[in-house]
Each structure stands twice: as C-alpha cells, then as structure tokens.
Length: 105
Length: 164
Image 1: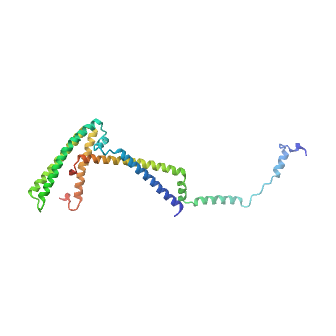
Image 2: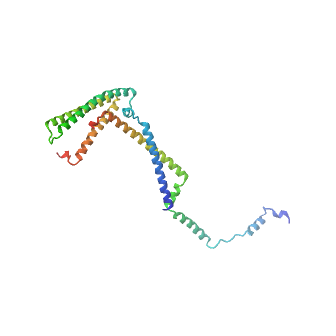
Image 3: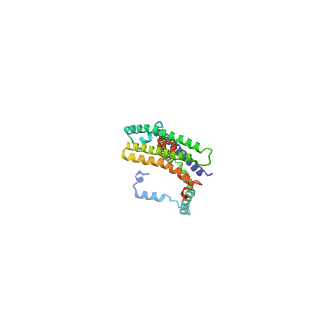
C-alpha cells in the first residue's frame, strides 16, 4: 500500500469516510418520547408539596446556622432591653418606696 | 405524622427554645448589671443623668427628709390607733371619732405637703429640664396611685361616687 494515499487532507478520502459513517435512523416517535419524559420529570417536581420544599429548605446547614444566629441576636437584644427596663422599674420603685410613705399610697 | 411536618415542628420548637434561652439569659444578666440594690437613690442618678456633686446634694436632702417623714408617719399611725379606739364598740361615728378623722386627714395632708416640698427641693438640685421631668414623674407616681385607689373604689359595687 502506498503511504501517500493516506493523506488526511485528501478530499476524495474525506468524502469516502463521511459516506461510510452510518447515521442510524431515529427510533419511531423519538421526539414524542423525549417530550413525554420532560413532562414526567416536571410533574414529579410539582408533586412535592410546599411542606416538603420548606422542610428541605430548613434542613440546609446554611439556613439553620443563619436562623440560630438571628434568633440568638434577637433574643439577646430584646432580653437585654427588657432587663435594663426591669432594673429601671425596680430602682424607681425602691426610690419611691423610700420617699413616699406606705400610709399615703 | 408526615416527616416534613415533623421536621418543621421540631425546627419551630428548637427556634423557640433558642430565642427564649437567649432572651432569658440576656434579661437576667442586663438586669443584674444595671441594678444597684444598695442605693435607693440610684434611680435618680440613672434616670436624670446626675453628676456626683448633684447626687451628693440630693443625698443630703434625702437624708434630712427621711426623719421628718418618719415622725409624721408615726403621728399618722398613732392617730389611726386613736380612731380605732374611738370607733371600737360603737355603732355610731361619735363626734370624737369625727374630730380624729379630720385630724388624720390633716396629718396626711401635712405629710403630702412635706413630701411635695421635698420633691421640689430635689428638683431644684437637678438641671432645669431634668428637674421638671422629675417633678412630673413624682406627681404621676404619687397622685396616680391615689387616682387608682379612687377609681377602684368608685368602680366597686356600692361605691358609686359619680351618682351622688
């Protein structure tokens, strides 16, 4: 065999190779089958309730971590404010108790 | 119970526990840090932003007022005992009991007058705005408690003062 006949730039050879590559025919109803599978996948996703989706969301570590941080900060801020306020009320009651006799209250 | 619902309820319970725990701890810590139970006048210092000098003058006034107040309170307590004696075993309000009731009223009025004079003196030791706020607050507390008592009496059956 002459090696010069295997030149990949040979146009004739290229055409022969393309013609020899078999292109299988699509299965019957191929396109309908593809659409059916897409619709089935979408129907499966819609079948999960909002409860499933929220529960899945809650279980995400990022969400859980953020929620804990927010709750701790909110609880601490409100608690601290209430603590200062209750200390103020107690201090006021102590002062009033010291200057206003029980007989007049 | 469905699993997602159980997850959500569990998460809600954990959230509530975390919030309540943070709230409780912060409330206790800040209340303890803000309180000074050893000093009756601490409220004045905090609420009306008083300096050490102003506090020293007010403390002097306070210490001078307490014995006067105590003496009047003792006289009021004695007068109440006299009224109890005058009313004891009688189905009528005698003239003596009536006189003593008037005397008790006078003593109470003296006590209140002395108290409001003290409040006015204290307020003058404060910056003007804070002094006015202090006076208004003390009037609210003292007169407000009387109003509460009077309202509770007029609201109770058989004490319909408004229809006299």
